[in-house]
Length: 361
Image (cartoon, rainbow, N blue to C red; front, side, top):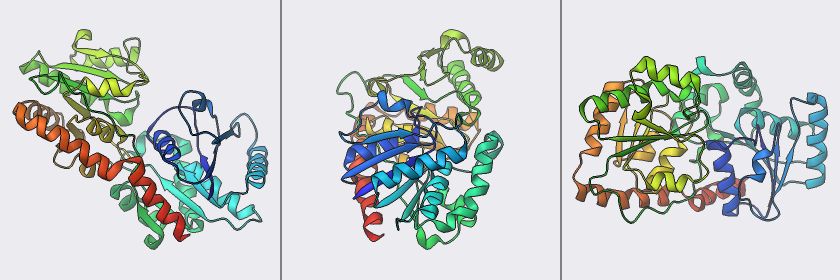
């Protein structure tokens, strides 16, 4: 099966991009091409299977008409058996390509977004959501990464019979074999600096925890999560968090090492389509505390806590409760958490579910 993946951008490694990379590496399809509407700079920074071709259309530096002609030429050369769109703009481009192509090619959309925090979305994303409501009727199947994403989009996109819920594919991590769960109290946080990630809630949690136990160590990574971010520095001052209370690491390429040095992982987002970092942390045996967004409940299950969005008291109490669990309980749950993720969210498990959808089409 020849699969043409059309994605909005392939420049920065976020949840949807990582899920696409993991699915490609799992062996979905005999031949794959990825076309990014904007940049494909990420291709030089990640590991992809041999023979997987990556192309970029170059928006916004060329006109939409030029980009459409380039996409049509690439598809005519590649001759795909199926088109898979990734995120709103990629989904729309896949449907428009199918509409203007002479080749009868089924279209699968993937929805990696939730509608919890529309105020923080860019104008482009809001327009894409509105346009997707019209074009979605053309999709032969729509894959949602969480039950929440499906529930929020079903009225917009209609016809739930074409819909299926398949989680993001993750790489299964190897849990640390020593140094953790022996009284360790290191809490990790990973997010790019963006309003949706709710850095103020994370800082309030740090402040609350350190007020009662200053020995708990906090480490954070992500684009903009660094000591040289002046906006973050002002935010820390406003929330009463001293510079030395959090170790800011910035972007990290070796996330396995990051997770394997943690005793607990927290996610404070106001909105998530899925919550990839939760599944990654749990695959390394790290329990999680998260706000109730994306697929947090399905991912975390009994291996941590899920609290209301924006509730600093509930988040702080949950962090204390998980950190204070007996060491023996934490060791057992660590192994069970990794097994839970491997069974339900591994790239191999997700590939089987994707393949079933494609085979039906």
